[in-house]
Amino acid sequence: MIKVKFPTVFVQVTKERRVEVDNAGSVKDLLDTLFERYPGLKEKLIKDDELTPFINIFVNGEDIRHLNGVETELKDGDEVAFIPAISGG
Amino acid sequence: MDEEQIKRYARQIIMPEIGVKGQRKLLESSVLVVGAGGLGSPAIQYLAGAGVGRIGIADGDNVDISNLQRQTIHAGNLGKNKAESAKEFVEKLNPDVEVEVYPFHLDPENVREIVKGYDVVLDCTDNFVSRFLLNDACVIEGVPLVHAAVLRFEGEIMTIVPSESACYRCVFSHAPPPGSVPTCQEAGVVGATVGTLGTLQAIEAIKLLLGIGEVLTSRMLHIDLLTMDFTELKLKKNPDCPICSGRVKEIIPERYAESCQL
Amino acid sequence: MKTVDLRGEVCPFTFVKTKVALEDAEPGEVLEIIFDHEPAVRDVPRSVQAEGHDVLSVEKIGEDEWRVVIRKRAEE
View 1 (tube, chains in turn blue, purple, green):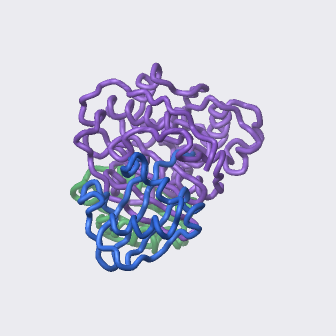
View 2 (cartoon, one colour):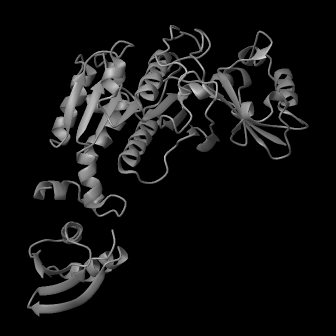
View 3 (cartoon, rainbow over the protein chains, first blue to last red):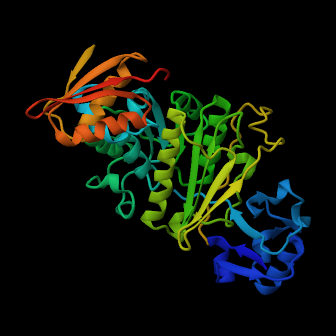
């Protein structure tokens, strides 16, 4: 199971903050599964067919941009977090 | 230090990480707090209490009743400029602290001159334009910056030590377009959330000033207070970052306006 | 030997002021501290030892007076 954490800006669409996803071999697989499960999530993450640069994806605390991007492999027990830019203060 | 100061700072002086030497250092140090709002309020409170000798406070807004839900230092000061109000609080709490007030918003024309007069800067602002402005100015001027931001129950904090660590642009290359990310004004925030982050900023500043502990350089602490999840994220300097690579030596102005939707 | 008179002081100022005196002293310097507060006589030696200093002696020198002799540790 991949453990996924959603930020506040997604909860309106996903209704949950933490979910578990089965059978996602890569970040890309995980995103496809999540987009299917939560309609409305895709438009928050994908702009012009690409991942928006304003929401970083971290696997076990490491930015996927420093791993293999969306091809980054996932294994059982991995934690994936979506970290958007926030500005409140 | 005189008798009264020894009594005032007794609880810190007895700590091995601080001691008399550390206390003297704090009294000779300076911190600029940009934003005397949700983040700035607790940060200013704890820096003043700890005896940071000079605190600069920059804020162009006036105290509004909706601020008092979380910005406790402004008690009794409705309508007053927030930087001036914060100065009053500090003077009442600790006369050892010299306060420099900037009752206006920082902009590309004045920011660099102001930040370079301080040992550490705290980003306690509430909008992306200011955040990128401070990041650029501090990296260019070589002044350490502690960044924090919140939204509802969520928050993040990272410390930028110019030329050593990732900067804010390494993580978020530029401001998001309007309509994509909400602000606290639209989405809300609980006082204790922003209070927690502002307090963490104060502790990072103290650690930087004293050279103790481990600061959040090239690390971001991401917290979700609804679930009490505290996660550390590894950050890396982006070799293509225009600011910390030194390629761009001027502030990169961000023109995006904040949005009004969630 | 320098004498630090802390009569009249109570915890935690007995420790705070001892610490201040030690920080201002030279490494290896010996100080004598005079207390009239009994809990300090137990706590201060323990606290300064935890910071690496040597407690050379602790003696009662009067009805409610104690003398603690401390040598500041060698390096900073």
